Length: 159
Image 1 (cartoon, rainbow, N blue to C red):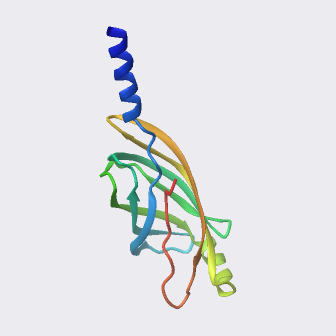
Image 2: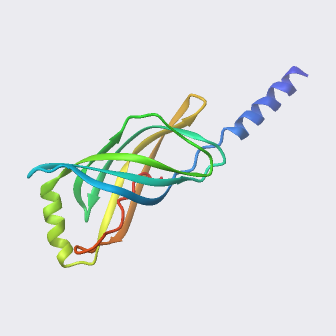
Image 3: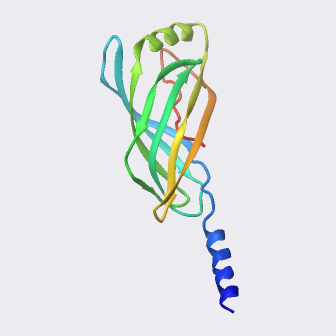
């Protein structure tokens, strides 16, 4: 009887511990240049995502490389514990050091193109109840670019 109870509890525990789904990118807000330099600049922005999971999760770490038109733009890291409620939007405050030579190269390419290819590759640690798993992610999509107006957002961890 104890074995049946043990295996029943183990099955319930496994069913409750689903692997989290990746977050859905929604929007970018509050883009600011906090430090402008010829070689490197610092930008900050708020990235808006949606948690599609039926449970809350904790985001512990994000580490990724950002490319525009296959040219390395910069490295993004986040080392803050952030609780994310189930089925909800959340804001991820983001800061990134940008290689300005890549920006100038891509700005020149933008004169001849109406969009840019954005690629983000990296890893994140997501979990709940103190148990975290590393989830690699890769995001790649074309985004419209308007040099004389606004451009689309720079999405990060999609999954």
